[in-house]
Length: 137
Image 1 (tube, rainbow, N blue to C red):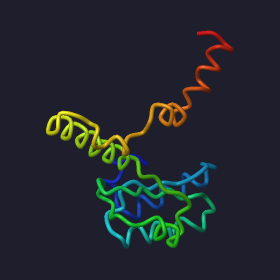
Image 2 (cartoon, rainbow, N blue to C red):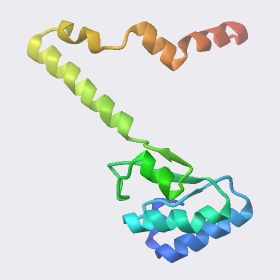
Image 3 (cartoon, rainbow, N blue to C red):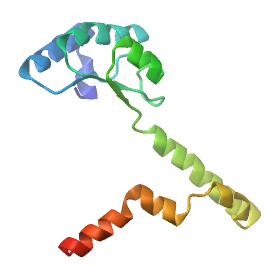
């Protein structure tokens, strides 16, 4: 459900989720429950439909922030935190530039930096190069 659909009533939203479940969708997600009570009621109402329930864990959304443990306890099957890693990267980038501009070097934070090897392993660069060699460009 798109955030724009949230302009419907909460009850209409739950009815819509029931209809989606009846069509055989793989999982259900209600965008932007506005209160903790709506988060709880969403899980309570939809869990009996037998579909995995997605919970958005984000401090940047209108939905109240809950922990992964709380989401599981409510009955959500899986969670995403789509923007938090970007916010963490932003803070780290700002710290790099602050130190570089303030101290004129990055030596004082070398221990905190990912090595090029660690980064390449993380993004799967070796596997990508192997596929390129195997299949060509």
